[in-house]
Amino acid sequence: MSSIIIIGAGLGGLTAALALQRAGWRVRVYEQAPVLGEVGAGITLSSGAGTGLASLGLGPALLAASLPVPDIAFVHYRTGALLAGSLDKSAPPDLGFAKARHIHRADLHAILLAAVRAVDPESVLTGHQLDRIEQDGASVTARFANGATATADALIAADGIRSTVRRLLFTDDAPSFANQIAFRCLLPRDIAAPFMSAGNAAVSIGPGRVFNRYAIRHGALINVIGIARTEGWAEEGWSTPASVDEFAAAFEGFHPDVTGLIRCAPTDKMIKWGLFVRQPIPNWAQGRVLMIGDAAHAMLPFLGLGAATAIEDGILLPRVLALGQGFENAFASFQRTRAERVELVRTESIRQGEIIQASDPDQANVAQAPSQRAALFDYNPVTAPLL
Image (spheres, rainbow, N blue to C red):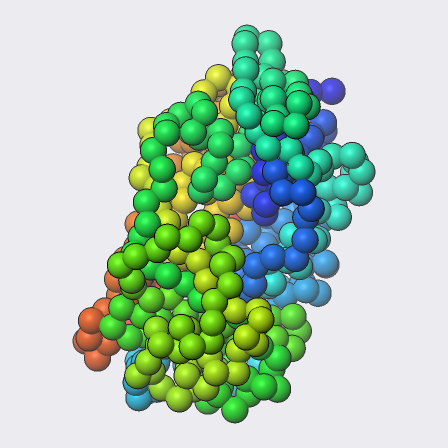
């Protein structure tokens, strides 16, 4: 049986692992974290990403754990006036994966991890920090800081924006700070309810700031995220503890619905992180090694499609390998197939941020924002033509 090493047990890495397992590959996933636990908050699962995961047998579990994305109200940061979208508070029809869905990242991760381990209980190993990679014409070997080694036919790097594989084999350029800081928290629905006059999902747009909230976990929790421009950031990681006061200060002058939600945030579960970017590079592959997800094409979160594009990568990967043209040709096909798609999402995510953080929200043409374009969310990795 042909074998593949995957570095990174995030959403992209686990999706790739499951897709490859379903296609008959022997897979080992190596994760540097000592344990895999509940991290993150709400994310958007695009219709195409959801369809791709359903093709791997995860449809029922995902539908049970997620909610259809409702009509979204884009509102003025100070007055709460509707700028675009809808203030509809009724429950949206559940069209399955025909539309995007909201899900807790930890729930999606747990579904993927359970599915991968159901195929092979030994397939995911934690506590393995990649140290170096060696390859020749017949195999690739990963060597880890704990002294372990692994050899396989190919290696997939799904190790995120600070990818070790990218640094070792491709470029040593560091991610650059995007002059944006994000805050997030989760609130019980009953606590958040008095501050949800703008409907089930709302995005408040203001000068240099955007505040987004929507329901997850069967509507029991409200996912809250605020992103604000800033000049400095010295922290490492994406889950630095934050205070309610600094979250509130960043969104001073916003409508009481926003400031009220912030003041309800649990003081011990407030998180902040800096947004970082990396410039596109011409090659995602070297020999028997391929980068996917943020390692290859990191993007800003303003469209909420970063996780979806990593999932798309994982779904499409065994399709190019099935062409039987060797790893170098298959990986070249993978990049040709994915490059236009991910570059579109990357650049449109930048444009979305510019529109919804406009200096004058009264003049921002939100109706023309990329988030209003269904094609960005409907890309189907199961049927997308291979190039």
